[in-house]
Image (cartoon, rainbow, N blue to C red; front, side):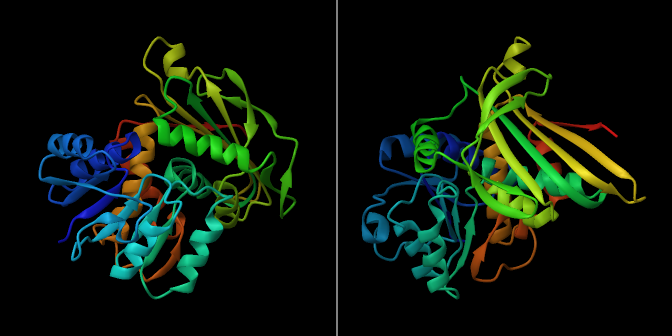
Length: 331
């Protein structure tokens, strides 16, 4: 099998994902690609049985030698020129994107739509590359009808990621001063973005609603007429307890249970390793599906994480990575 080309593979998200893939699939060839060849080589050497290359995301062919072969392309940095996507399409191999954001996906979707038979394109610019959507779908199994989904994520201020992650957050924030929500079945943008975000230990942090792909993905996947996503940056529950920064995700669902009675549930996911292993799981879940390490062959075209990954399998992988999951019945 040809190697998976990890664009930005020497950055925090890329290196964490590569390590996760090495753990899950020790025989999977990986090529760590970055602007700094020395740094990419260090990551590849730590992984073992991996190659390192220097790439230029602003050049046709990414500056790679003619005849380079890869089984998939994973962009763990913003592929702003879409030349990573073009590289994958030209070779007919799957492509994964995690950094475009709700405000940036139009060119990516158009590029995928114009060449619908070229390659599978996974648009995974969700929080943690789709993990929240998988969790919401998992929690929704208990419901006959889901009416409301409220999502909150706490990003520890000491675990905000590397320069690429910081640039993504800044770009997404600058792109819109409003946030997308679904209200009474209608997707709309709201300027009223201030929101309280509870951490896993119950401490409430001031946060804001986000214009993020999770909102339409969760709404369509669960059928909920009211969906919002809030995030806060501050002290996580793990650090408040005297440990390392954790990553806290809270999902509250309201609707009707299988018996027909009103039902509310709250799910908390906490990872003591912070946001990097959670994001790595999200990316790895999508990739292993695209390269048929899990499930059947994926057809060319545009895909979302929730269309490819079984939520129960996603939860097992999250728990296996060290996350904890708690369910709190409310009514």
